[in-house]
Each structure stands twice: as structure tokens, then as C-alpha cells.
Length: 268
Length: 301
Image 1 (cartoon, chains in turn yellow, purple):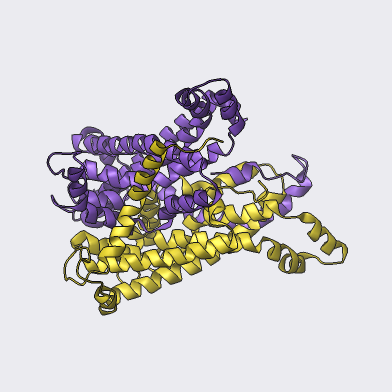
Image 2: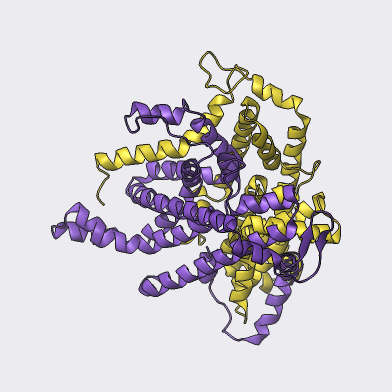
């Protein structure tokens, strides 16, 4: 294959700088020793990271986001694992329609989902509650949990299962001791990707969160609408660091390029 | 996006009804979840858009076309939707123009560099969009923002440009947010291209430009187009970036619906805006998908 010429490499450099610039700027400004927005020109300071502790609403929002992300991804997997097994293993009438329905939250704009859930939850009387947020997040992260679980279930070697069946294993034992361990890397990656989606969602959650159930992106968004100061950059930098950690976890278990490039089949 | 499902091997013969029952039993919990908390709320939203609303009486569950009539006749809404789709279209074009060559360059890199840069370019996808847009707000900030300083020192512009609270700024930030989707899509198409075809063309004396135009471009075009559909629909319904960069006056569909719901409290009107956005996007996406699949039928077979 031919290699990249100098023009291509210049283009590539500008492209990468463009992609990283806003993220690098946020992280740099977070370390400013000044009381206003500026690049740290005279020394680095952690004062704005320490300042986060003085804003309990941000700390609380962080815990809400963390709990919501962890719980909604877990609940989504409880629904997604059996569905993935059904879609991967059985050919039944309506299989394509079922799969399309399960992936449909990816196609619906989150602003529409936010409005639909807001209307629904206020009607049934759980508007602004954590339970409502949980239900909404389970639905939107479900496709991500499903896709990675499905990839694992599709690529699984069925002969191990058949051996277990021939040795008398069945039902729950078969699932718990054989099937689940075999698809576990896909399930864990599905959880991690679902977690990131839930943790980052703003557009839908901004409609559903009330004071007390505000997630971190919602809290940050409402804050940024009023004023942009170094505090919100240090919070952003912390969020970026958390996301990086989740990415490394995802990379260890599954291979990040596969998750991101949407390549589903590990054999391909 | 449904690649995993298309390639799923089928273990039972099609139409074998003895295999249908466990499959439905396994999918039943998720199906009930979707019917209960996705389909019903969406139907309720469509109904809401036909309800009446008044400052003092609140929402009245009657069937009227008031909201739809207002959207159809008040030029404010036409202007707002036109702005929304103009920004989305511009974002899509720019993302394709730069994303496709970048995916091609990435694909020609050697192993380790390839994975590193793929991570750097696709990684931002998973970072909170508020944090990313905040970065752009910092870069734009005022007449002596970093962006203007850089462009002026490079001699690209004579006087500072306004980025904050303008469509220019919204498009720049949206291109950044959407770029990973475009690169990903073209990248996936490139994985199916046999590099030997390029070598064959080269050995037959084709110039690099001819190779790109006649060999590479036709093969990655389906990837560019499907990436364009994703980028367009996500840009047209984007919320955080237009809200932060566009400010309170420069409204797009998503930010207007948000305003109607949480500031004006005119839920039926907000629901109508959202339903119209959804319907318009579904029509555009389904329509262009059908066009692409017909045009590139041989690639999808």
C-alpha cells in the first residue's frame, strides 16, 4: 500500500489539532491560578479543583450521574442479555422488526425522547423523580447494551454449550456456568458503553431532572448558561478524566477500536 | 448500525415455528419495556401536540389544530426550521469534506499510529458534549479569543470574526462534535476496499488524483453517504451545542422545544415542534437511505 505524502500528513496534523483543541483548552484552563478564565501562564494551581468541594450541588449531581449510569446500564443488561440470545440464536417471524424496535432509541432525537418521557412521567405522577430518570436511561442505553451483547452471543462457540447439555446441564445452570461466562466480555463492554452514554446524556435528561435529581451534565449545562468560569472547566476536566478511565476499562476488556468502529463480529 | 444483526447466523430454518416460542419468551421482558415506556410516551406526545394551552388554564385535552396552524403560518417557525436544517446541512458537508480524506489517511498509516490516531479522533465522541462545547466557547471567547488570534496570525482573516452567538460558531463546534461519526462511517467502508485495486491502477500508470477519483471515491461513497445521514440527523436535533454557542436568541428546533417546555410552559406547542422535527428527520433519513441503497445496490448486496 502507498504511504501518506507530506501534504496528507499536514492535513492530518491540522485535523488532529482541531479534534483535540477544545478538550486540551478545557483541561489547561482548569489549572489556572487566576480567578478568571485564562490559560495558566504563571504556574499551575489546583485551586479550582479544590473549589469543587464548595459546591455541594455539583458533588451531589456527580453521585446522581454515577448511580444512574451504573444502575441503568445494569438494568438495561437484564433486559438486553435474553433479547440478544433470542436474536442471535433463533430465526423467527418478526425478528428483524424486533431488532429494529430495540435499536430505535438510537434513531429518535433525544429532545423528542425527553419531551415524551416528561409528558409520560408527569401524567403517571413520577415527574422529576429518580425512578423516572432510571426508566428513561434504561431505554436510551438499551441499544448499546444490546449491540455488544449480541456481538458476543453471535460470535460464541456453541459446541461448549452442547457439551454441557450432553453432560446433563440445563436451564439456569447452563446459562450461569457456561453461556454467561462465555459472553461476559461483551456484556461488560456493553455495560461500560451504556454507562458512558448514560453518564454523558444531557439532551434528554435536561427535560426530566428536577433539583435534587440533576445529573452532572445537566448541572453543568445550567451553570454554563449563566456564567462560564474556571470552576466549570475543572469539573469538565474531571469528567474527561473519568471518561478516559472508563475508556481504558473498555479497551482492556474488549478493544476500543472494535467498540468505536462499530465492528460487531470479533471474528471479522 | 444494525451490522451485528444482519450478520447473525441463523441456526434454525426460517419459518420453523418450533423455535419461535423461546425466542419470544426471551425477548418478552424487553418488548414489554419498550411498549410500556417508549411507544406509549411517544403516542402521548403526538396527542399532546393537538391539545390546547392557555396561560391561565394550562393544558386542555381537546383536539384542535391550533399549534400546527401556528407553526404553519407564523414565519418565525419557518425561519427557525430553515436555520436548523441549514446548520445541519453545512455541518454535514464540512464533516464529509474533511472526515473522508482523514479516514483515508488514517487507513494508510501503519498499525500502531493507526490505533493511536483512531483513538484520538474517535475518543472525543465519548466525552461529555457540554465539556467539548465549553472548550469551543473558551476558544471563541470574544474578539481576542485564541481562535481569532490563530486565524489572524496565519493571515487567514484580516479582522476578528464573531463566533459566539453566531451560526458560524455553531457550525464549527457541531463539526467537531459530529466528526467522529463521519470518520467512523468512512473508515468502515474503507475496511471493505481491497488495497490491491489501487496498486493495480498505479501499475497501469494512473496518477494519484485519478486513483482517488476513479478507484477510491466510488468505493467509499456509500460510507460517506451513510455517515452524512447520521451527521445530518444528529446535527438537526442537536441541543447542547446550539444552546451554549447560539445563546438565547439564535434558536434551533431542539432549543426552541426546550424553551416552550421549561420556560414558556406551552407544552402542546413544544410537542408540535418536536413531533415535526421527528417526522421531518424520519422522512429525510428513510428517503435518503432508499436513494443510496438503490444507487449503490451492488455494494450492499
